[in-house]
Every structure is written in C-alpha cells, then in structure tokens.
Picture 1 (tube, rainbow, N blue to C red):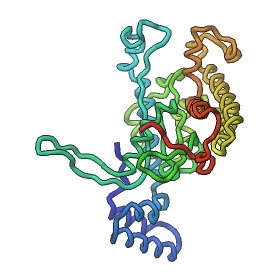
Picture 2 (tube, rainbow, N blue to C red):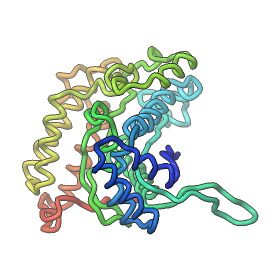
Picture 3 (cartoon, rainbow, N blue to C red):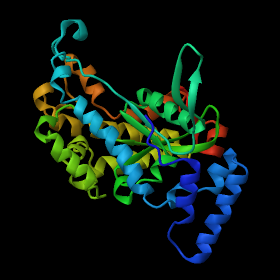
Length: 331
C-alpha cells in the first residue's frame, strides 16, 4: 500500500512554497533546482527534507491511523471471529483460540512508479530503497513480536502527538541501506479488548476522517484501547533497558529488560483475567498450562533484544559498541 504525497514536481513545488522567511524560501528553491537537474538518491535523501513539506504531518498521521484502524477492524470482524474456535485452526485446543494476524511496515521517501511485467501480464508497482525498507520493517514485525514497525524517516514526519505514542525499540541497519536507523512500534493489542464497543457507522467514520486533528491520538477510542496496557512504569523500564543495550552494557540491559517484560505480563493480565483465569499477582506462580500463554502476552521487543544479547553470550561485540546498532537479521 502506498500513501502518495505527490509526484516529484508537485512535491518540489510544495517544498518551495513552505513556510518560513524569504531566506528559507530561497534555500528551498535552490535545493529543488538541484533535485530537478540531477535526481539521485543523495539529492532526494539528503538535500530534500520531507518534514518541511506543508501538511506532511497530517499525511503521515493518516497513513499510520489507516493501518491501525485496519488492525482494529480485522479483530472486530464477525466473519473472521467465527473461526476463533475452528478445530482445524486451534489444533483441537479450545483454550488457545485462533486470532487473525496482520503486520505493517512503514517508511517514507521517494519511489519509482510504473508498470512491470511482460505482454502477458503487467502489474502497476513501486520500486526503490524506501519501498524495500518498508518491506523489511513489515518482515521484522515477527522478530519483534509486534504488529507495526516504522523507520525513523517515517516517525519524524508524524505530529508531536503521534510521536509520543510510538516506541523506539531498536537501532538497526538493513541489507541494501548503509544508514543505521532507529525503528519504532505502535503497541497495538487486541486481546482483552472489546473493539465492538468502538464500532462506528460508516458515515460517522467518514466525517471523523474529514475532521482530522492531531488530538485524535488521545481521543479516538480504538487507539486508546489498543494501547491501554502501556503504562509509564513500563515505558520507563523498557527505555532504560534499551539505552543500556545500545551503549553495550548488556549484562545490566538483560536484567532491566526482563523486568520490563514481567511488567508487561502483569499489565496484560489485568485485561485478560477472564481468558487466563489468573490474577496479576499470580505472574510468578502459575500452572504449566498457563506458562506458554503468559509468554505470549509478554513484551515482544524486550524478548527480542534479550534473545539477541543472550545469543551473543551477553557480550556486546566491538563493532556494536562503536556503531551502537546491529544488522537486522530478518529480510
């Protein structure tokens, strides 16, 4: 899926008309001319700043909200929910209902639009490094145990209200991209949440979409419910562990991230007490049948970083200490 900001010429015109004084406008025109004379990756990525485009914050917010709304709609769809206890999908275990899974990857930048194929089959598609980056973000969702990942290039385009909701989970390099980028997630969760209560009439939803405001990140019921398990205590604990990991203090990082994961389990159990038939105080004293399910409700990014560090024998390689990032192993 592509949320197109505009064609090259349109974007450069918007860039030149951006706010600011006359000096800033002249600088934008100069950079735009450089782009038009030689459209290269260096010009597009370094000279051109998407976050200076008028209205780009709303565009980025709408792209993220569109994907999160899709996530919510899938998990309140009656046609899908009827398969939750389908024997062929649950392996005959009614205690582990089937849930449809969907993942999203987001990046921002330029792409080549065109038809690819042969005289027998032609498809419209988009090609470019930013398309590849978005694809790698989507693929990495499984490794981090989340439903959405985005790059720093996308995160910096979001409104201030949206940025507060996206969590920095790691800093990585991906194949084909030299620059290391922080990657972020929106902690969307559907278990233990009755998304049916937030269902809207299509006409009402259309009106809300037209009347977009950055305040939606703090007022929309879907967005609030999907993040209700995230507390300031957990965020502080995870951020501390992540920072220790990035500076190479892995021994302490593993300890702190394990605490963050336990905090996430307690948070999720508050909303899953009926499903898990346990109370938050039982997290350290549960029967065997709940062990796997408690593991499933832990924090994916915390477990991902812990497993990576343990896989390196708990010792940060010299290259990691110097660059403060790792290569993203998944494609």
